Length: 109
Image (cartoon, rainbow, N blue to C red; front, top):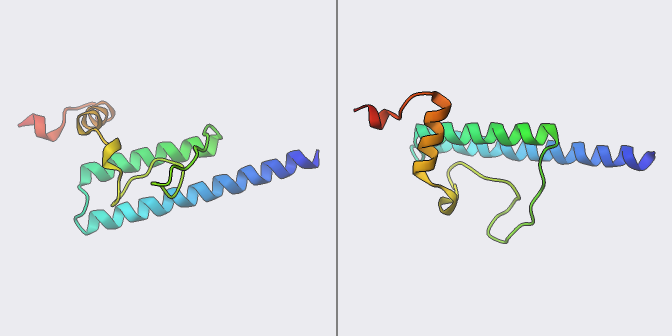
């Protein structure tokens, strides 16, 4: 069963690499927030999304996608250089409201 042990070692190394990539993206997002390039709401959503990604990686419940040339890695990506074509603001606000169990600050008046 040496192959199984090697496979598990490769899986763990892959998970560690993915965790480091997620951490680097969080660092970029934090710097973007400090520099005023992203808002607090976008940062909060990105951190939640990153934590969800990290949970999937830790549990092994993920599948790497083939890279498409526009991306330098195979997972969703947040921070200073978020992919705007994937972002639906209304959907993001609705998800944040569900998570916070309260309406958006903008809707409170």
